[in-house]
Amino acid sequence: MSDYYIAWWNVENLFDTSTSAARPEWLKRKLASELTGWTAAVLERKCKQLARVINAMNDGDGPDILGVCEVESKPVLEKLVASLNLPGRNYGIRHHDTSDARGIDVAFIYDKHKFTADAKIFDRVILKRNATRDIVQVNFKTKAAGNDLVLIGNHWPSRLGGRFESEPYRILAAETLSYWLDRIPGKMGGEVPVVVMGDFNDDAFDRSVVDYALAVRDRKKVASKRAKKPYLYNLSWGLYGENRGTHYYNHWGVLDQIMVNRPLVRTDSALRLIEGSFDTFEPDFIMKNGKPRRFSRPAKSDFDRDGYSDHLPVFVRIREP
Image 1 (spheres, rainbow, N blue to C red):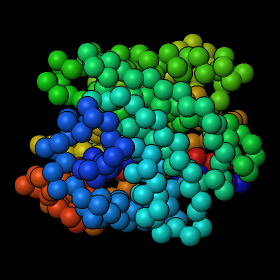
Image 2: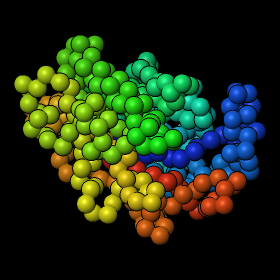
Image 3: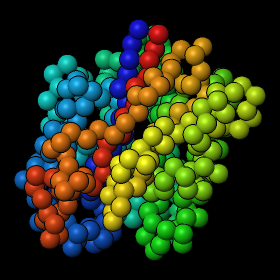
């Protein structure tokens, strides 16, 4: 039997240095003032701070798979992986370079001792007059038993301009996700376990998540083989009503969520959700004044070299009997 620790984290603005030669000219102009003072030393400090959190995950053993967003490039993610102090791990990277207006991407790191990852990455950029954010699918296979496991990372369009004014773009992202879920069984020769994770910029009760991504809190509805729609079991509902969340801006929100499809909630599947295993990962050191401790940027008045991110990681455990 194998248990897998699968996590998600919006690492908040993990950019390359302000003078990066790899950054396109249009992005240099876009980020010029934002990255003032973002030196190699600052980037190294940011990676070390993020690594401190990742090292502590899974009782100090680190994640088996970690999805991340707000990463500028694969080389920057490689620097983060190199900062980890997990001798038993051998992490690989699956990264998708998008045309987001701020150049921030979705990616996965995974333990190559435990998984193989398909070389092909499926992606979709959600357009908001200009490219913004993305949905990224990577197909994994367990090494222990050769079972398929699909992960879909999401970073949905922000609420910039107003929550309801921007909502149609997140609905478009949700419809795209649901379409993918509907097609996966046909492409892979039958139902396979799918873990959907991300920063959705909406709560679990918002229309984009419930009505369009079809992510619900009713496990039986998801597990039923009579269901014709690609429902998802949204694990994040347990965070409500406890003055908790994954992101704090004036109040707590549960913007970072993990959802699973039907095979993972059925007891006759090769890979199964460990019920009750979903949670935020929030060691004491990651919090300040009751909310996530931000690293921010040197150009900002709230720059904190001892900070981490404005989001908390979330995780779930999957069992392979």
